[in-house]
Length: 174
Image (cartoon, rainbow, N blue to C red; front, side, top):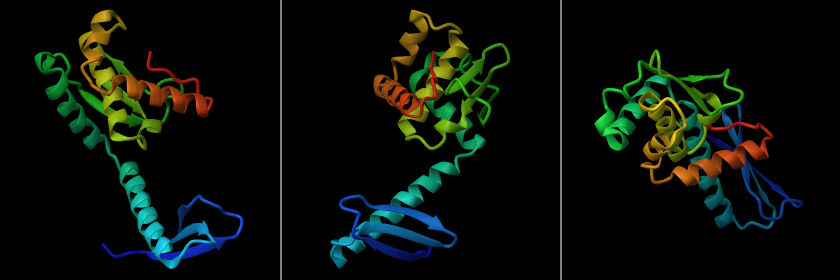
């Protein structure tokens, strides 16, 4: 993979923050004017890596999501492998009040596109939450017991609550 053309823009007003964005085939990196050439090189490399990671996350496909769900079942719900086998798992753009939804009757799981760019550990939590509904349809103590098998459950719930609050989305995992 070849390195893109990079345009560095220095700003007297910018004090500490660095940002980057794509402008066609070029990447524009915005840095404080006081940065040395070495700091500039370091930040350009760092921002190119961040842009690449963000673009990788946005390329997440339904097939990859289905495969991820299978890995989560094998790891956290092995004794429920039969019940927790969804017919389909897919990204959707019409989830405006939830991070995900599950229809146990037909075995379908839908995950909001808003989750697509979130960290892997958050996606794993949302998937496990919906997979657990295939085993226990309600939000009972048994359901939450299954979800709690994921070690980052509380962290992921906090992350989702923070995103929801910051964006005034009012979304829930209930």
